[in-house]
Amino acid sequence: MLSGVRSRLSIMMFLQYAIWGAWAPVLWAYLVGPTDAAVATQQGVAVGLGFSQTGAGFIFGLLWLACILAPFTGGQIADRWMPTQWFLAGVHVVGGVILLVLAREKSFATVTVGMALYSLLYAPTLALTNSLAFHHLKSEKEFGAIRVWGTIGWIVAGLVLTGWRSGSLLLQPLLGACDSLMLAGIFSLIMGGFCFTLPHTPPAREAPDPLAFRKAFVLLKDRNFLIFMLIAFVVTTELQFYYGPTPQFLEGPMKIPNKLIPATMTVAQIAEIIAMAILLPIGLRAWGIRKCLAVGVIAWPIRYVFFSLGPVGPLAIMKPLVIASMTLHGLGYTFFFVVSQIFVDMVAPRDIRASAQSLLMLVTLGVGNWLGTQFTGYIVGRFLATESPFAWTYIYMVPCALTVACAIAFLLLFKDPEATGEEKEEEAGEKTA
Image 1 (tube, rainbow, N blue to C red):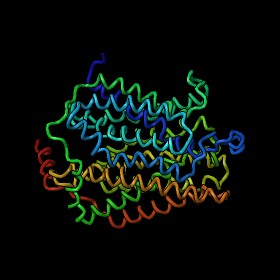
Image 2 (image 1 turned 90 degrees about the vertical axis):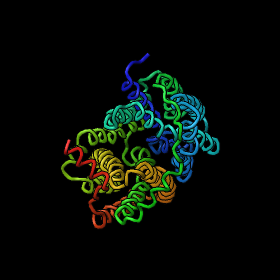
Image 3 (image 1 turned 30 degrees about the horizontal axis):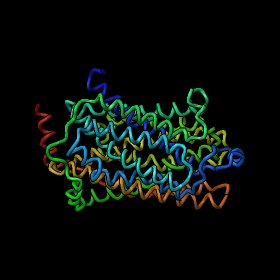
Image 4 (image 1 turned 60 degrees about the vertical axis):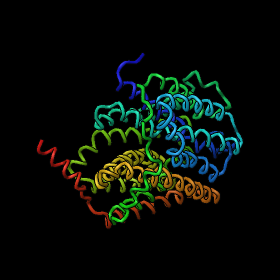
C-alpha cells in the first residue's frame, strides 16, 4: 500500500492527465488521415480513418459538451451518493475498456458514439480529481505542487507514444489499432485500479448546485469583467486550431515523422511547467494581473504567425522556428488561463467566488472549446479542400487575426483590476500578521 497522501495525490494527477495526453494531441490526425496506405505514403502521413475535418471537429467537441454536462451527471453522483475515489475508479475502468474497444473501430458512427460515451465518463473526473485533492490537502497553496504532476503525466504520455511508434516498445505489434487510444485505455485501466488506494472521500452532505454559475452573472454588469469574459471566450475558440490539427500540420508541410509528433508536441507542456513554476510567481509580483494576462493573450498570435509562415519559408529554417514557437502555448496557457482564475477570485465577492469560477469554466472549457472545435473543423476542411500549396498558411491566418484582435482589445479596454473589499481585508490582515 502506498504511504503518504501527497504522493498518492501526485500519482493520481499524473495518471489523470497521462490518459488525456495520450490521445488529445494526436487523435485529430488519425481521424482525418487517408485510409489507403499507398496514399498515406505518398502524402508522407500515417494511415487514418478518412473522416472529414468537420467530422473530426465534431468528435473532438464531444469532450467539451460533456464538460458542460458534467456537473449534472457524474458530479452529482459523486457529490451526493458515492465516495469520490470509488466513482473515479469505476468510470476510469469502464472508460479504459471503451477506449481499448474504440481503438479498433473504423466507422464514423461507431467512433462518435464511443467517444461520446467515453467523454461522459471522463469529463466529471477533471473536476473531481481537483476536489479530492483539495479535500485532503492542509492548504490550497499545496495544490500547485500536486497539479504539476498532471502536466508531467501529459509529457510522459507523449514520450511513451513516440517510443511506441518508434518500435522500441513491446506494444508495437498491436497493429490495426489506434495507438493513441490504446495507450490512453491502458493508462485509464491503471488509473481505475489506483483510485482504490486513494484516501476515502465521502459524499458531501450538501452537494454543490450544478447551476451555481448563474449567481455570478451579476459580475457581468462590471465593464472590465465583461470585456475579460468576451476576450477569454474568443481566445478559447481559437486555441482549438492548436489542439486539433497541429499534428497534421507538423506531419504534412513541416515534414516531421509521425513517430516523433507526440514527443515534439510535449515542448508546449515543458514550457508550461517552467512558466508555472518559475516565471508566473515572478510575473505576479513584478507586473500584476493585467500585465500577466497581457503576456498570455499576446503569446498566442505570435505563435500563429510562425505557424502561418511555416509552409512559406525554407523548411530548414521554419521547422525549428515552428517547434520553438510551441513554447508560446505553454507560456500563453499559464499567463492567461491560470492568471484568469486568480483574476476571477480577486474581483468576485467572497460569497460567489465558486460560482464565478464555474462561470469562467462554462464560458471557456465548455462553450468556447466546443464552438472552437466546430469552427476549426470547418476552416481546416474548407482550405485543405482547395489543395492550395498555401492552404495551411491561410488556415493559421484565421486564428492569428482573431487573437491579434483580442490582444488589441485587451490592451486598449481592459483595466488593472482592484480587489474586492474582502480581498483587501485579507491582504491587510496578512500584512499585519
